[in-house]
Structure formats: structure tokens, C-alpha cells
Amino acid sequence: MSEIQDINARLGALAKALPEVAGGFRQLAKGAHAGSRFSGAQKELLAAAFGVVRGCEDCIVYHLDAAKKQGAEREDLVELLGIAVEMGGGPAMVYAAKALKTFDATS
Image (cartoon, rainbow, N blue to C red; front, top):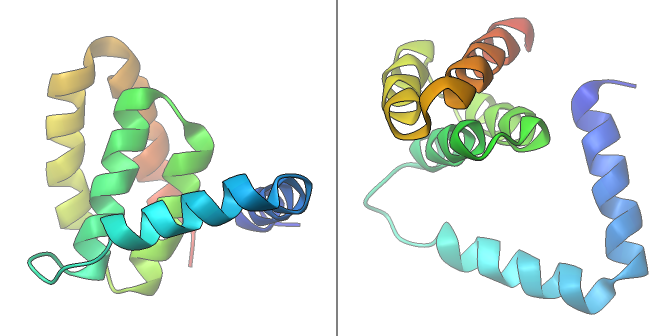
């Protein structure tokens, strides 16, 4: 099972256990991704960068998978990772390295 499949399986199990919470979160995510000023790929890269700042490995993997599926480019991620490191300091540096490795490793 790939890392993204594992994440999706865990999220699916949680959604079954907490359907109202999961449904509310899906609505929140849908609303957060509404609008057209940024592309879907840009929004997913931003979410991955926030994952770097927050130190959430699964968020990084999940949002980079979505970003790549929407045509995100490595150069865009690298630029956002610089800002994430600025805002998150040393821990963000470590997660930025994880994000870049994840982007490069997935197809």
C-alpha cells in the first residue's frame, strides 16, 4: 500500500467513525477551495506549504499528491517552501526537505 493509500484508508475509517465531523470537514475544505483566483494546483501547493509549517507529514503527502494530479510544477513548490521555512523556522526546514523528496518520489 502506498503512503497516499494508507492516508486515505485512515481518513476513510475516521469518516466512518465520525460521519458528521468528516462531513463538516469536507464542507470546510470545499469552501476553502472555492474561488478562481488561484488554480487548484496552486491551492494544493499552498496547503502542502502549510503542512510544512505545521509539521504534518500526512498533510504534505496528501496535498502534494493532489497538486501533482492537477499539474503542479516543482519550481512552484520550491518557491513556496522557501516562504514556509521563513515562517516556520528550523522545523519547517526539515518538513520542506520532506515535501521536496515526496514531490520528486511520486509519479
